[in-house]
Image (cartoon, rainbow over all chains, first blue to last red; front, side, top):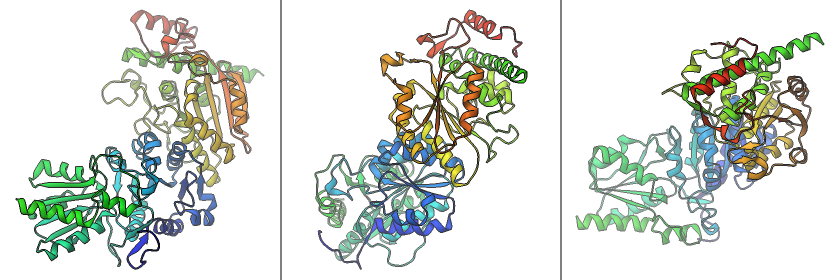
Length: 318
Length: 282
């Protein structure tokens, strides 16, 4: 997967993020962008050039990054923190919890380079706990967009919303899910394909894999529904129930530890109201080996072929 | 000079009243952070009653108000007492301190208490938040000032120094940190647990204007706070040498009284000492 990727099929997440941030600067005069020496890697440099008075770089100091954002928000600013997911959630976790979420301040937390999207960086720079941690904070909105276009839409929706939002974002090229305009609403899952036999509920870069898995299954006569659960919290309960009522099996797919993320959120919903077998595909509670993102995903089973295989195996044995 | 002497005398009386509120709160709960609440009360009193902070009890969220952050959140009862005296919150909250669902508790909640500008409790957060508030004022060309009260034990938190660097970088002359330098933390002397000296040199090296005062001398507190308002392009830190448990003889300079229970006898003696010649509220 090295080298140039086909731009008709792949788009860079960070570029979409940076372009959206730049665009929103005009719409929101109170918007302030903050980084911890990651202006270029988060592609917020164009915003910084255009709005130097509304750009804060605190150096490599994530706790201070989130604390300053909280202080700005108490004074009516709309801070957007652009950082890498693991540094943001883990190093500044307490500032997020106490200073942003407990206080319910209007801070947007953009956590880039999440999951395995910096695969060669290794566990120090990867992030597979962030959704689990952020989901446990009362009242925090947790969004995991699937591709470049949805990243932009999610950032726009977060800015529109009044309150703290966590945006789990990727890094480099991801498969395009949305070629055309579409409607993004926080907390409202998007069904990308209808199906009867199995429902695949995915988010982040795994949505594209789910779509591809459904195509593979269709060739074998298995009909799969694909749901993009871009908002993990609050989760779209009705969408989960609808899947459980129709399908013989639900498969959740996420680029995150299987502990505490999307799969867990779906199980929590189902445990109270419905019974439907669920297979959770994700990082199997290990620190993965190092490797280029797409190869690493495949190695861990975070790919269309494995989703399709899991569906087939279950449906044939039941 | 007479007017100034009268103001100083007034501040002293006011501080005694606030200290009485603190003891009343902790007595209602049966325990409290006596040491660090009493050590910063003279400073908090001067901020609210020495003509330093621009606030309005009728409009606690006034956008142009000065801000106060009790970064050493366990010292918030000093602010609670001041907010009672200022008319921000009702006096009956004092007796309800730490009861189920109470507005006033060990650490401050901005959404429950009018006049509290940010929730606090976990140490090391307040200076960053204060820097954010001061940055917002500069962005909006507003002239409000931000005050942050830091504990000296709290200075072991790395995030304080992250914020110190950023405040100098962004030339936050509208930000004043006040270090409640009582030389004691939970485990004993700050200089044994984690030495913070040479403290003035540290702040100076981080780009701050440093003022050293006696944190119980109202004339010195007042002068230092007035001086810090001038601001300019540099944040100010006031290192206020204080006595933990100031005002109550058996608590003063006692490590154990950082957080302590209180008996009926201790309560009576504390109040008697604090009331002195003033008539504190019942």
